[in-house]
Image 1 (spheres, rainbow, N blue to C red):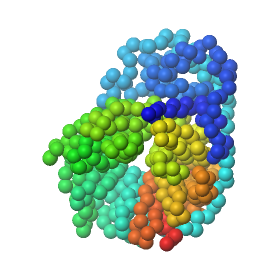
Image 2: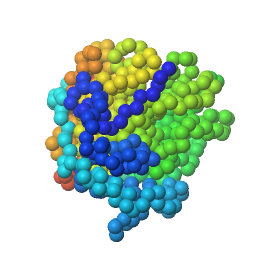
Image 3: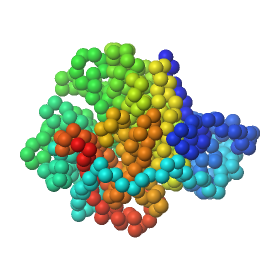
Image 4: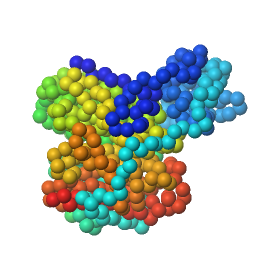
Length: 506
């Protein structure tokens, strides 16, 4: 079966016009015919897919490329020192000891992007205007006196959990946003799932990108006064942002798949629980694993792993299980580093019995903090041979996470999506969008009247009030790089730390 589909950034340019557009080949340009092109494309291809000059403006390229120079052993050029992480902890071997190219070749590369990059790039063109008003959800807010820095939101029956890095605390709140318990945890929590009589949690170590690996895998239980740390199962992890539980080797016991995102370096592996010890088995020694699913995607009776990587060579990878916990890597899709891949989910969106991919891209935290017209919510539909094609795209600046569920109880899957890098000046409402599925992958896009208040980094769903429909909780991360004005930033600091959207469909 074929599982390989490669998606190049240049092909996304034509996809920004609407939900029914397909990726198509772009016409040759002078940039593609330039005699320097083969060498430059080869140099860039050492780390990631090639990015067309037209994808960013001249000024952004001039800021970005010096950060790429050290990857080729170029640490200064024409009297300018280039920033790098050379010499920092856990970064040994990251950069070549000697330049891989001459100063002349590097200048050719700079000149190439400067020549063909536009002064400005096209902004998002909305294929569908979103509606203001979402009556099926009633909002309520949780407040703190400190600037909200939420790194985790988790929904449970009767309560929800949120970790706030500003107060270094895990809060458990009820359906009315009243605090049930508060637990001091100095290591920021990034993800949690039920396990045995309590929870497994990953602590990221550092909110900011770092190769100072202080991540942890923690087992905790609930008490009347808050969470109690029972055991730290693993230490010195490379900034673990997510994990999933599932039986990978057929012994009817849960294993743990870990996304150790890292920064410059990271890894993706699974842990076999053997009594009081954990046996680590590497899936891919690469930074950027951000989200994973454990699922029998090829329907052969064993559990496979599908993972999104969001650093350098951004891609979705299938780790196909042989039934005994041995995995074969197959790349499903690859994206450019400009893509800013941020989340994915497997769900049968067209009800054909085959899992499709809901994908968001919009991370603008690194070297090109500008709005990009290819950011948004995508749906790639799968076929029985394991191939995927783009079937839907909605432009959403800075799209950060999307979750599918039949929120309105009409028999098909809707989508809730958040943006962490929205166009806060002109379109502040796109920080949260709701995609009401009207059939055949057509969606009516709406926003809630209150969700413009926060800068949403986290989102989770669940039936918090046990009434049979799915609720949503959002977490406000009021810090971080953005082009928003100081006035807007002040609004985020004063905004709710969490917002609960209670579904009143039932």
